[in-house]
Length: 186
Image 1: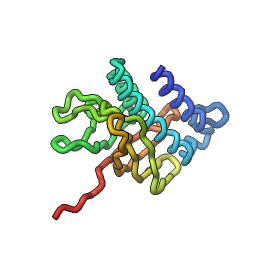
Image 2: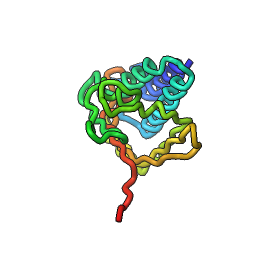
Image 3: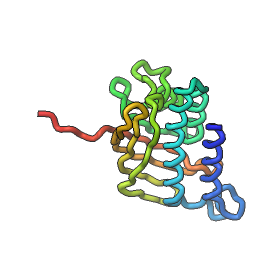
Image 4: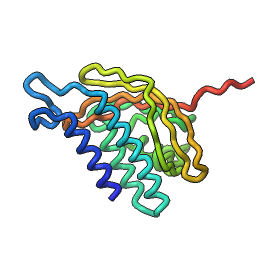
């Protein structure tokens, strides 16, 4: 069921970008420009995926397969370079491969990774400061809030996400930078 929700959301993104049945590829002039609505939908799909992974983990479901689908479907590792700097990464700060990204979300190949998506979170919401769209790419920056399933408290995290349109017309993340807000220490 969770996989179906992710798949349905991705199909929705594809359909939003379609023109004349071209699967988001546009007509003879090239790819369809990325829209703000597509960026907002991609953020919702990402957020729902993080919650679904944690829910699957809590319910002894196949959270690893769900996380692998999440990374493979939403990140552009199969099509080019992805720059990923996760929130809770100190020793190995960057996740430049699909395997390293998966490790960040559910643990695995990077020793410091404990599985960010396994918290679990009951909700994730994005608040964009703004979105820059440059026809074939987009960048969104703002804060996103993760609601902890155990405490009910929200954790505020700063983000920058970059998006490109994949060969199939789907938006893919090619930049993901997250950080906890600065706290002055005396």
